[in-house]
Structures are given as structure tokens and as C-alpha cells.
Image (cartoon, rainbow, N blue to C red; front, side, top):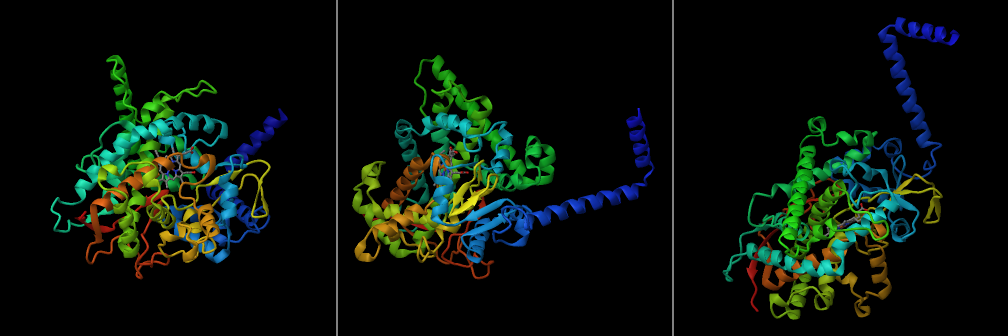
Length: 543
Ligand code: HEM
């Protein structure tokens, strides 16, 4: 009774307090809370001794603005240039740019990290984690086994005709059949995007998206990059995981604008493709017809041999979105960037063209396999492009698990988020001497030209466009296959050049710091990459 009466008097005292005084108490409480947190973060926090700008140590808001601004990769690089090989880029986040850190954080199967909380909200619109966003290591192992069927040797073999067919359409659309004249200029960012998307439509869902010929579905690749922007910054918002259930709601659309709308359109589009594929499989089965063996076929029929589990409908949707996004835009970025670097580096263009034309007598000979794999300069061009323009240029963040890990000789406590931004390490002169030159030769051992086996080994050890280890890209072999078949076909068939007077895709002295190199392909970092140009002309080659 006494307690009740005390509470009663406490409540009545509270009710008697004027609103203005209550507001004041509230404001004082909030200020006190943030002051204490801020002091803790810069003094007693376990990461307090790591260098970095004060604003990064206090909150994640600088990261949020970097994601929205599209310059995160440039800022990471500048921070490393200023503060050294390890920088505190958020209250709880460390960024590294050494090859040793890269291999400790991502490399080994047993590395003591997992994907960070940042991944938790990305697939909220699908109602389940995708294989790429599942944080729990055991659950991820099951999901990886599900999707691995889509990337098996058999699946890759089945993929090649779909790739060849789309590459042939790509080549036909690039130039007229009149061999005497140069074609109209083409914006290769757009054309490579449409190609990447058409290939993924055929490979994943068995459905022609026809972006190379028709406007109808071209809004989807645009929606992918726009939606990425939203998914990029959203997880850094305070209590983002609480907002996850309403991530794709009308309210968020109202607050977050076009990129939220595009995220909804993307998920709906993937759901439609998935439904189409499910029905197609049903009809084929009823008719006793062999199913079309595309990536979704393998996923729909996946069963984990260890647990007997099958993907749930929500997981199928999340992985459909994943295939659509991870598989199309990445390869498209690399292709467009290769065209940029080739037309800006005539000697590299001449060498790779000569290599491809000497290797094949006709386009029909350009197939996946040992012969194309042996073209060292073509590989050098692809790897050098991905070094300069990694399609995921910033952190793919990992959280240290209980027990901590040791990075570059220092113990990092559990709960810390760590990562190596690809763009920063790919331009670290300790790993890549003369990092701002486009130099495919650095990937090819040639003692006479001063490229030693050790330097090529370091070049490879520091290379991470696909990330590494058990959470690295499962589509890497497929991506290389698409990439090299496309480049080889175009270079075999056409002479190419940058359209006269065109600068689309280049940096400029008028732009902000980090975007001033004219010969660097400009990326807007939105998890993936938004890009424009180069503007390229084509002419049939003489054989
Ligand atoms: C040049 C092209 C590509 C690049 C640079 C690339 C890059 C990456 C990177 C960096 C990751 C790790 C992401 C993270 O940790 O957050 C990743 C994961 C993944 N990629 Fe790729 N990717 C490419 C092409 C593809 C293709 C063609 C596919 C096919 C659909 C694909 C499917 C995946 C999947 C399913 C994962 C998640 C793997 C897992 O967590 O187990 N990627 N990719």
C-alpha cells in the first residue's frame, strides 16, 4: 500500500509539473545522454586510440552522408592516405588497406568474423535474408549449399549458350553492317547494363528481358542502382533494424523518395520472374517435358543434403532479387569500365585486340575454355579494370566475433566492425606501384620487363573485387566467363574508338578532389556503382 501511495504521489507530482519544465528535463536528459556517449566514444571506447576524424568517432552520420553522396570510396581512400593503414571510420568501425588485413578479415574459412548487422535490413522487402545477407554462419552454410547448384560446373556449361546468344545480339546492336563507316556513338554504360541484365534474365529466369532491343524493361536496371542507394544508407540509420518491417511501406516511400519506390518495384519485378519460373516448371512437369536448366531451376529444386532443408518461398524471393542485382550490374560495370580504359589507352587497346584476333579465326571459336583462358593480356585488361573500378568499391563489412581477432599485430575486440575498401587497397602504392596508371602488364610475369613473380603474387594477394573466402562471390567464374566472352567478341569483330570530343565518364579538374583525373572512369558508389559513358564508336574489323 505504501509503495502504491508513493507511486501515486509521484505520478500526481509529475502531473502537476508544467509541460515547459517537462520538456526542459527531457532536453537536458537527451543532451546529457549524447554528451556522455560522445565522451565515452572519444576517450574510453576500445577503439579510442585509432586515428580518424572526430566526427567519425562520434556517430555513423558521416557514413550515412557518404553513402547518400556516392563518394564513399573516394573518402575511404583519402582517409587512408591521411591517417594511415587503419582508420576509425565510425564509432565502432575500423577500415584497413593492407593485404595482410584483407587476408585475415576475409580470407580463411575459419576467420573469426561474420557479416555485420549492416546486412540485416537489406532484404527486408523480400521477407527473408538472401544467401548474401544471411549473417548467421551456420544458416549461411545451408543457403550457400542451396545456391551452389546454380554455379556448378554443369550449370555453368548450360549457361554458355545463353551468354553467347546475348553477346551476339549485343554485337549486332553496336554497329551497322556497313564496314566502311564508324557507327553512331554508343553510351557503353547503358549498353553494357542492358547486356548484363538480358544475360541474367536468360541465365537466372529463362526469360528474355530484351533490354538490348526494347525500352519496356529498361526501367529495372535503373531501379536497381537507385534502390541500392536506399539499401546502402538505410542500415546505418539509428535503430534501422526496428524500421526494417516498414522499409518498403508507403510511409518510407514518402520519407525516402524515389529510391524507396524503386526498391519496391525491384522486389515486385523479381517476384514476377520467380512466379513465371515456378509456373513454367509446373507446366513442363505436367507435359513430361525436360525443364529449362537455368539458375532458378537449380535453386527451386535445391535440397540441403546435410539438413534436408529446402528454400522457403521468402528465401526464394530474396535469392531471386540477389541473382537479378548481383549478377547483372557488376559485370556491366566491369565491361563499361574496360571500354573506357581501352579507348583511353591506345597501346593497351592495340595489344589486346591483336591478341584476340590472333587467337581466333572466327567468332564461333570464341567460347569458354582453356583457349580463351590462356589469353594473358585479355586477363590483364580485365583484372586491371577491376582494380581501377571494383564494382563494390567500399567496405563489405564484417563483425568480429567473441574472442576477437588479430589484425596487423593488434588484437581487435569482439563486436568491432572491420573491412578493407577495395578501391582504397587497389590504389595503395605499396601493393600496386604507380596505382593511377592503367597497366595490364602488371598482372603478367615478365622478368625482362621488370615484372617479377613476387610482384605479380602481391598484386594478386591484394586484389579483392569479388571479396574472398567463404562469403566471397560465388558468381566469380560465371562473371569472368561473361566478361571475357563479351570483350573478346567485340574486339574480334570491331575496331573501337572514343567518339570525338566526348568526355562522358571521365574525371575533370572542375570536379571535387578525387574526381579530377581525366583518365579515371568515374564511379558513384551505391553498394554497386552508378556510371555513365564512355561514348564509343564501332567499325567492322578487316580479317
Ligand atoms: C564482376 C562481377 C562481380 C563482382 C565484382 C562481384 C562481387 C561480389 C562481392 C564483392 C561479393 C561479396 C559481397 C559482400 O560480402 O557483401 C559478392 C557476393 C555474391 N555474388 Fe558476386 N560479383 C560479381 C558477379 C556475380 C555474378 C555474375 C553473380 C551471379 C548471380 C554473383 C552472385 C553473388 C552471390 C550469390 C553472392 C553472395 C555469396 C555469399 O554470401 O555466399 N556475383 N559478389
